[in-house]
Length: 545
Figure 1 (cartoon, one colour):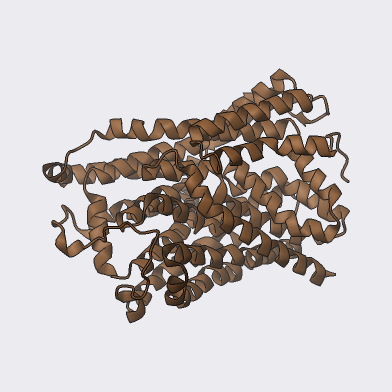
Figure 2: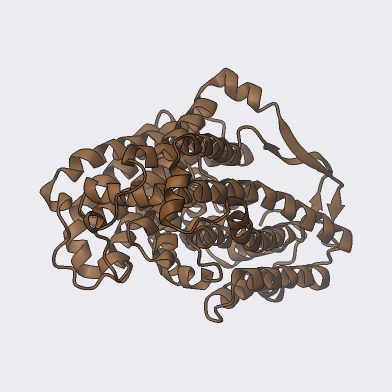
């Protein structure tokens, strides 16, 4: 095993995994709300660190402070996203969008796949960091999806795009922490990562179809899933061979364009027939023709997403502008800390600096301001208020955002405590020590998923476990690129069960406290993807020999 002083005996391994198990038990079987379950898991992690992992109070305090700072990164998405939601909602944009989409295609399953799978993946390719969930979940609700299912679809269907998305930030982080610099190794790592990510790509679309209407829905939609899944997954794989950073974005863009000709296909342009039970859909079907005319046009209702895409592409793809804006970064200094087992975290002058002006939260904030100005000038708020009881945007924002912030902070503090106390290393090294090489290959993606579960980020998962996975692969004589590919896949699909991602979705959907219900949908899918990814990783390892 790699040299480490952390204990890897069974007792410490069980104690290390206890906070994670406790969190899942609180959320799923006990059905606690996230604001209750999150702090309890945080305190559990702190107690285990202090009692069993020889972690001084100072180290726990520093870890907690870093966790709060990590949470601010995510809250910087949540608050502007909820602001944009209220700005568009109070202007009647969602009502207009729902009615307009219903006229675009009368096949609601086609629309749901287009929004939750394709559009969300496109947004992940350029923005990421919660923006797809923030944008897509309310859209799904407007077309008749029940809030719980809308959150599950919004969190899960685009999970495949998490690794190469946001212009490859997770990919670049993995290369850096694992010290992969040989051009041939880079190409192989990109290829095998994209190959394994094909599994959550196709299964993401299939899950949406399955929860919509089970077997009859699958029989209706399988050609659509096959076509779009190939454009997304195989498209990403091909582009990853020469430009991994653009692979998700380009694949998502092509799939988005392909939606128009597919909508002209009679099979997906007419209402779905032969699906008697549709558990994901609201009981009252939406009939756009029978409703009052919307206060704005479809193009005007879609303007927020056009502005968001334009602002994001402008900032990210214009190098001089991007370089200038990235100069503004805020990070906090932290002292060096260690544990009694020798786990050290060096002093840092600027921990996890946030590029304030290029952060997705800024893109959402700019979009919110632009849309508020446009909608105000167009008189849409006044027109909507004549038909409905208006809400104050600021008050509605506080009601939604404050309860969402508590569990996010608790989850990220828990993650940092697990990291700084050595509990994460105990989990990883304990698994590696107990399993033979082939078996380790089978669960390598689960370690990546664990990192995503803890941090709600593919990038953070790769930073947390990339070096560990690389070391274990070399120790066992396995292909390092294959194990890193498994890490990449796990860091992507693990976001489907990341509590902070789920809280973001439930907050926007107006079902705060129902995180356990969402996880009961996404957890079985995640387990299935983990099993299939593990089998595929084993096949790659055996083939490499």
